[in-house]
Image (cartoon, rainbow, N blue to C red; front, side):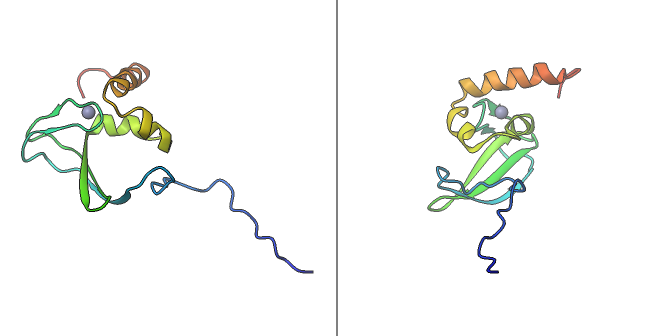
Length: 110
Ligand SMILES: [Zn+2]
């Protein structure tokens, strides 16, 4: 018997950033302290100098850095790649963030 059909690996795909409509490739991620003020690329609110945030470096005809508040980055976990297309225009994102905060019921400041 000829075993010509490979068993399709079901399920186990995790965090694939190189998807169809994502033209950039993930390079590295770190959580530095801001040496100067930045703007969060998700909520478009300021990341003040000295604040620890997520800096995700990608490559797309050259390297770029996508900076996010720690809390904002948490909101994006579990996003599909199309969410990155549709929810990252600031306004949409801030609504998502509000929802997230409501769900999690943070006590006090983060
Ligand atoms: Zn933010």
